[in-house]
Image 1 (spheres, rainbow, N blue to C red):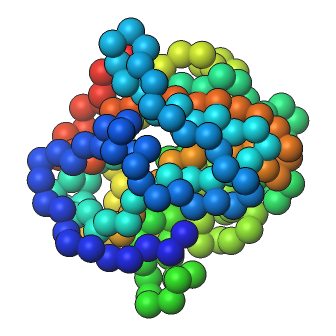
Image 2: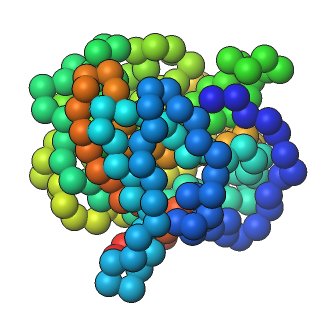
Length: 208
């Protein structure tokens, strides 16, 4: 994902509604994950429906981690991908992922990204390099079927995760994205996202 730096956003909270995210550009890897905004019980959600496809919604923007170091969101999935080895190219599929990226040079591939994933096989809390590039590191926040079908709130200190995975402590990132994908293993999944934000507070969002 090529990211272009924009103006630094410095605020106590930077929020992205499902409508905002749905309007972001789409980066296709294999076909088009179907994104749409739906409403359930009075809450707007972004639905991502992947049928052996992979495309991401992404935002290119420089976000100040001194002001808003915490990335937070709520997510829910319909099911996991059974029997995948997620450390291999053939198993690099996730029912849901949210990721952040920072530019490390002028060339498009000079980007380091932290991918927060709902893993199917890798244990929660584990991390590993993406099978296609070590410049993308994956971190399993949830794993397996134990919480399938329920909303889960996440809060991450982005700088701490970059320190853990890349050994650096950035003062900003250059973009973020989310997706549901199933192209490498030919699998299907549906994910829902809401309450995506950068915040100065580590307080988790109140999920639907």
